Amino acid sequence: MSSIGTGYDLSVTTFSPDGRVFQIEYAAKAVDNSGTVVAIRCKDGVVMGVEKLIVSKMMLPGSNRRIHSVHRHAGMAIAGLAADGRQIVARAKGEATSYESTYGESIPVKELAERVASYVHLCTLYWWLRPFGCGVIVGGYDREGPQLYMIEPSGISYRYFGAAIGKGKQAAKTEIEKLKLSEMSCREGIIEVAKIIYKLHDEAKDKAFELELSWVCDESNLQHQKVPDELLEEAKNAATAALEEMDAD
Amino acid sequence: MDLIQIRGGNLVGHESDSQRTQYPYVTGTSVIGIKYKDGILIAADMGGSYGSTIRYKSVERIKPIGKHSLLGASGEISDFQEILRNLDELILYDNMWDDGNTLGPKEVHNYLTRMMYNRRNKFNPLWNSLVLGGVKNGQKYLGTVSMIGVHYEDNHVATGFGNHLAKPILRDEWHEDLSFEDGVRLLEKCMRVLLYRDRSAVNKLQIAKLTEEGVTVSPPYALKTHWEFNSFKNPTAGAEGSW
Image 1 (cartoon, rainbow over the protein chains, first blue to last red):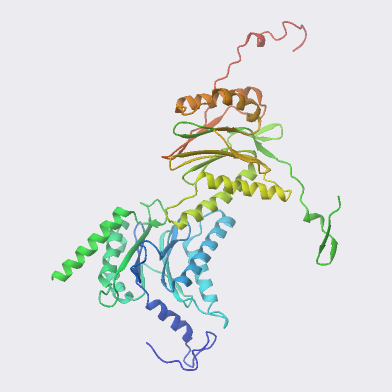
Image 2 (image 1 turned 90 degrees about the vertical axis):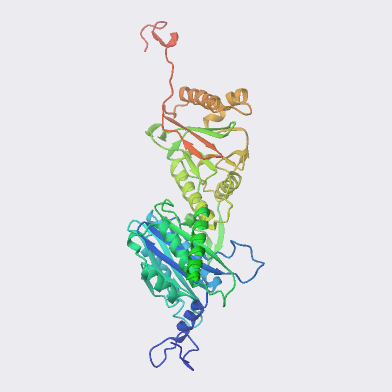
């Protein structure tokens, strides 16, 4: 995957002879180095989970949020450079409120993803801007039902049943593919996402991590919110239990 | 008075640069609010007058704001809707922080005051008198903001005709720790007087209750009125030929 783009990688406005824009690929590497973000679309909603790596014991739990609400019905989980992520979230919030102001209804998730992807792409077109060093997963619930979109630093946006970005994304994707998402409810989905994140967390390389879980589903009244504390505890316990079971084998 | 402005070469500004005070078109009449034992009670009728015509009879003039506040408005209905839009965005952004803290009635009251006063300074007021009540962390709050930005808080507030007809009743009969039934009875007494005497009042009202637990806006109902006064019978008895 990695190749040295000597000479062709100094600016985002330069193509390499084989048609690649190296700056964008390097931006993607920033995303690959961050804690994993896993999201799945269940039959009644979307669940998003983040493996928030704790850099310092001095940090208060619950701070440095990686999952943000963008409007009542949609949320975003960020992987990569946190500061870049903040900008994207702010922009998404602005787009969502301006859409509602103009059209009188909540922004459809597809529209939101398109606008955010457009903005991310914008920053890959000019030499005086650098690409965003973060990947974003947008989860929302509108008239078309629950939807999940992933936006990469290149500005590409696709709709997914299940998506993962960050360090453990390969392992996460394998796990997600094993799940029967079309029959799963969000309650079950929470447990599954927690299990996946706990499973692919590398104890050796990274020390502690905090699990951040959010959902938007029928049960949450179509609002995007943090998973309620009791369910979060339940998910964490189930995930640790599953890990121990695996280790015992 | 001529406004001489220097703007990009124009010595005299365009007429469109200066706003004049508007006229209200569709208006709501009085709103009354009181504190009671468990929280706040606000009453308002559901009329929207178009000048002297009572054009709309199902206008909801009391709305919940976030989890902790209630807003009642008299005056221009379209301006009230605009205020609600602004507050909706304010509450949305507050909710999205998701940091365990939410805007309470005091903060919303202050925000409204700023909004009204700044518009007034531009000679383009939002033509409303607002009643803002709420409960947060056990603390009851009841305040009012006028269209020119005059604001204060009190145990009982009223707008429009309510100031003249309801306030005296409230001053006499309001006391600390009213029960819910007593509070409603007091409000209904005031609303009844307004119904008799305010020509823009309609007999269809809502009473909204806000406590620590949440907001309830009652379904619309009508007050019983009494017209069987002797003087109303045989009105021409003392003056034959008149009507």
